Length: 280
Image (cartoon, one colour):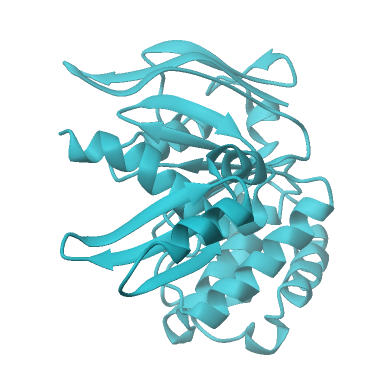
């Protein structure tokens, strides 16, 4: 279990994360959503101990997380937005290098690498250098590298950024399988469909503050399950309804280009977080 208590990060007068309180249960898939500058990556940085909080603390299973607590840090693996791998190394070399950093026996590194590369469908490409891999393969290799030490918590900062649609779907399936093995996952993403498909709960962040947390389904239900879109001179306008009959009745009164559809998490995000952005 991960507990963030009044977690705060300040840079001089600027507050990047502002007294964040959050509890993520063991085995939960949690998504942190927000616009650029919301504080998502800074939060991941503090959870990974790359950044030290200005105030507050992070606890893992009731124990305070610090840079000095190597045993606790070993429970956590991080996948960053950037491809942080040497371009001239093969997959096998990347995995062996990572294992040696954690003083793993060579036999364990090789058997674990074989298992992970097979799990991610990368065995046939293991002797290719990183520079010859596709973007999707690089992301999968980063997942393999992160899982080599058998962590209990996986932190993912925009893991599918820059992927094409097929590679993104493959990554989603991979993450679902990992979560099915009781791996606790914290994900930051700009893709609302990704969060809606993968996450048990999501949190909406803006300006360093956590505005709301709930399951995607509950957020959509509270907002209204049905959306009516109308194109007008002002652009696309949407109205939301809890009952389909009410949506159909409203739709019948409209003219021009209209559509009835199911509400998505993106609708919720745009309405709630978008209002903050418009008021800036």
